[in-house]
Length: 139
Image (cartoon, rainbow, N blue to C red; front, side, top):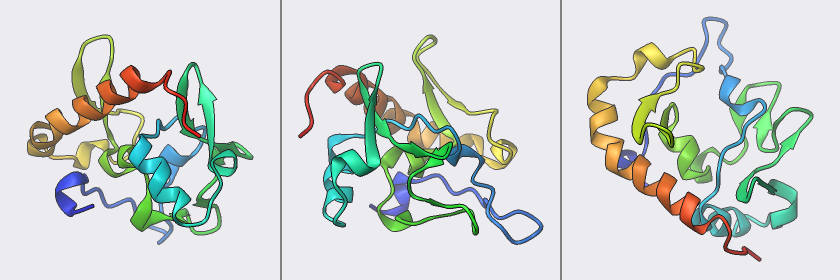
């Protein structure tokens, strides 16, 4: 995936660690492409994903994403992380139909308005794709 499919946010904190706040109690939805990409790394679906309200999402272990290295705050599969993680903190609000910068992210104020405009269609497409296919069985 190229940089055009990600939002650049410096998640490094003043102490040198990475924020990773978004990796705790995550409900990050997975696309079929995400699942296949992660499976190719040798992971079994049951080890990294679970169903929540009909949507396949990243699994949490001890209240954080299964792929989070807690000591460093880094993602163990960063180069292969789900598209939703690459686009975060941009999120699709299903109630308003708008792409928003998630105010939960401590670095939300660093996201340029231009990034929101550039990624709007992709974020919306991914969200709609997940919502429409959430009932489709992934094996």
